[in-house]
Image: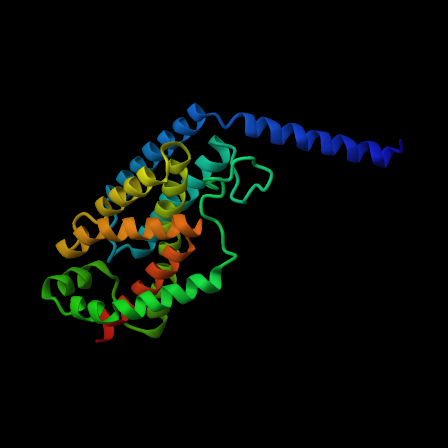
Length: 250
């Protein structure tokens, strides 16, 4: 056997051993413990974010930075460093029933998801317009959103809202949904992420706060079916961009 063949054989053997050890480690107890860690970590990060004392209108950049840290960076650290999991589909896994190992980072159907998001946003447009006319809501968002006084500030707000929604949606419909589904099953996982999503809207206008529990459940069902958080991200981002224009210019 040549030196090159020996190296290739050793690499293949190492890959088989690694795959076997990861697969063998997927006991029911391990998955339940992982789901519990995801739930506790997610609840703590939400609590820390919403008790940070950061004002969205005065410190919008810091608020988005806090979301980037609490909703994206730290949960990714849990997945990569604590669990030793990646964000790609592992084709060699024997049990693909839940396919939760990639935590919703599945973008192959992005055109389909973008079309779905556009249709849902158009359907919601009359309601968004009506809701933006409610005095209580208008007063809240005038204080919530940063002031827009130039095209640059508008672009800055739109760009940061897109980033914020990416972090927000992966946190709920990626990290929490797929992380807890691994041990608790997808039905309970959908309910848990919807509950935390609704609580994260605490303090917002009452209709928005209560409807967010239902919206979180519907988005959870959609993302679980598609095995991707992308549909929820696109829907939430498009709706918020429309919302910015409704609250600012109409």
